[in-house]
Every structure is written in C-alpha cells, then in structure tokens.
Image (cartoon, rainbow, N blue to C red; front, side, top):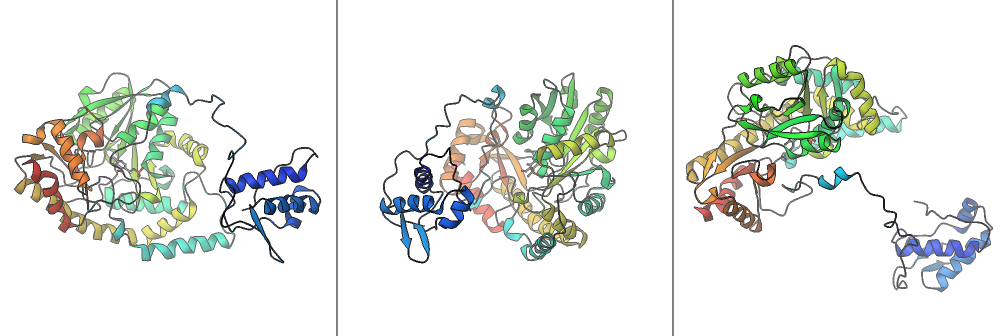
Length: 481
Ligand SMILES: Cc1ncc(COP(=O)(O)O)c(C=O)c1O
C-alpha cells in the first residue's frame, strides 16, 4: 500500500517527508525490508521536485532508517533501526469524546469464549457447530465461481433485502424443513441473527419501549435493544417455555427461542405458543421467534413454528446459518410481516447496505443443489449420536449431581445441578477446575447471566467428538461426586 505523506505549505518539504517516513517506520506501517516508494513516483504524487524526495531519503539512509541499493531503490533497514522517539505526533486520547452513557453498561457476551480455537482437550462450549465436518470441498468451488463472476465485472452492489436467488432458495428450504410458508418478498438476508435483532429493534422500538426476553435467556439478544434505549425485562420460563402471563403490561416486543429454549433446551408447548400469539394480538405487540438450531432434531414431534401459527402478522421469524453451516460466515435471515418490509430493507441499507453477495450467491447454489440438505442430514446423524451419548452418560452416571432438562433438538443440553454441586459457589469452583484441566465447560450462570437461574451446567456438543464426551463429563463431575 502507498505510504501517506501530507505536506503543509512550502517550507522544509524534505524535512516533512523525512519525518513522516521515519514515523511510519517506527510505527511499523513500513516494515523492515519494505521498499520506500520510488523517488520519481513519490515526487509526482506530492507535486515536488524529485530532488526534494531524494534529500529526505538520503537523510533516512544517513540516520540508519533505510538502506539504498544501487539500481534497485531504498528499503527500510532490516536490522539495527534507531530507537524510537515518540511514535506519533498526535495524542488522540485528549479530546474528551465519549460514547453515550448507556454504552458504559453494555459489553459483548463474555462466556463462553467463542472466538478462535480453544486449547481445551474436551470442548463443551455452547453455540458452535463442528467446523471440522463442514463440506469445504463442495463450498469452495461455489465461492470461486462467484468471485469469477465479480472478476468478469458482473457484480456491483447488491439488493439490501438480499440476493434474489438466495431468498427464493430460503423460501423452499424453510417450507420443507420448518413448515414456514412465505414468499421471497418477505425474506430479508442479514449478517446472522444478531443483525436481524438489531434491525428489528431499529424499526420497531421507540426509546424507552419495553422488550421482554426469556429468563434465563440468550444474553446477546438483549444488547441491540438496550443499545437502542429500550427497557429490557427478563420474563421467567418454566417447563413449557416463556410464562406468558408474566409479560409486563405495555411490552412492545417479546423475544423467544421456542424450538429449543436457550439455554435450558426444552421446546415451548403448543398451549404456550397459542397463548403468546393471543397476547401479541391483544396488545398489538411483536413476537420475535429465534429459530437458531432446530434443524437438528432427535425425536419427538416438532411443534409448529410461531410464524406458521400466526394468522395476522405479529411474528417476525429469524433464522441463522451459524449452526447448519459456520458462524464465521455471518449469514442469517428473517421473515417479517409485509407491514415492516420497507422499513427493514431501509434499515439494512442504513446498517451495511447488504450482506456480502458472493457468500449469498454461493449459499443459494448450496441450497439449490441439495448440498445444504445433505450436510444437515449428515450432521443430524453425528449430533444425534452425541446428544444420545451425553444424555445417557448424565442420567446413567451422574444422576446424583445433575437433573437433565429434557430436550430433543439443537447442539447443547443443560442440566441443573444438585448435591454438592447444588451450591453456586461450589459449582463455579468445579467449572473453574475443569477449565484449568482442559475441559471447556460453563455454568448456566456464566452462559445466561448471573442470578437469572438455578445452578446448572450447559454442555455444548457441537465441537466435541462422541468418544470424548464421557471422559470429559467425568473430569467435570467425578471429582465432585
Ligand atoms: C439463541 C441463539 N440465537 C442465535 C444464535 C446465532 O446467532 P448468529 O446467527 O448471530 O450467529 C445463537 C448462537 O449461539 C443462539 O444461541
């Protein structure tokens, strides 16, 4: 990349060039061994005599910052650079610019640590699929093909609502896998669930509006609403899901995970779903249905989605490719009532114009060619074995310490803890010990916000092989029994 040099007035032009290049070398912007721009080129760019640049370069060479190679140019010294003085001539911390007060209380989800690889030998982190089993060989040519299109000049900006082929493919995929009937015009492609929630909040909420979320629940879902100045209230869940009667009066929107409650794991009963929709209708409120991992099901009859049960446009359905493909792709979507369509499209445009087109187009092909369905079928089998292994091991060997929450979908199970691990401090210490011994495992309080729940552990099985599950559980629980 060209180094940026800014000249002020007409005085000491060589000195100005010299000082800025020296700072760039000290700051590591120009790295050892890297060529400085040819004098002819830099002098043209700066509209100065070539000799002016030459003098600056000679000074850098004389002071040990650069070496001149005959016939080749001037290069940053590879060894023995002079010690740095002040790295920059600006102090950007003094302006007093501050974020709005509400940002002081907001931060990303801290636990489980989901960024990058883990050093753990037994990985029970929640929220991750098995990236080792993703069909890279099938995906690579699809991405390459889209980049070839770009190289041929066939691609400009995309539609904020999403790639037309992908939206059509999603309509078929949702119809088949989730029984959600909709048209492409109702689908908006997003950078994951997280962006969908952010966009929904932007178009729906006035500052001070109340949003209800599940308690315990998915902490990242609270963040966009809080950042938009909404009041976020946790509403308890019981064995049937969100307790609809406990939603506070005046609530404008409710966020739920009905297929596989996060983090507990049980589905929302049909009775509760119906009650929630009735509540939404009575209150003119929105229901945000986060259907993040229900493609993976292990028995039991699937309950209809809220979106399929909705007769009058109160539900916004949100889906994600983070579990069925990879979270790092950052791709998801929502199906919204027509009344919100135009505003959501504009909100998406305002946020980032659109989701990356090559990824969307490749995904459209991936769905259309049946590759997604095949990948899901394979992974379903793999995850079902892990789900079975983990639930069997917990009930067969650790029933004295754990009380498994029944669940038949997704990539994690949750167990309340009892006996010696019924004490929150003892449980936190056991989780800490397990992590120190190479088992990535988190308590319910860590995953789903403190004080929001009974003591428990959340076991993700997206990235742990079936044969590692039982030894991993022993490391976490055996020392406590
Ligand atoms: C409840 C819930 N919703 C959504 C997601 C996926 O979010 P995204 O699509 O932003 O990756 C997760 C991932 O862990 C989740 O647990």
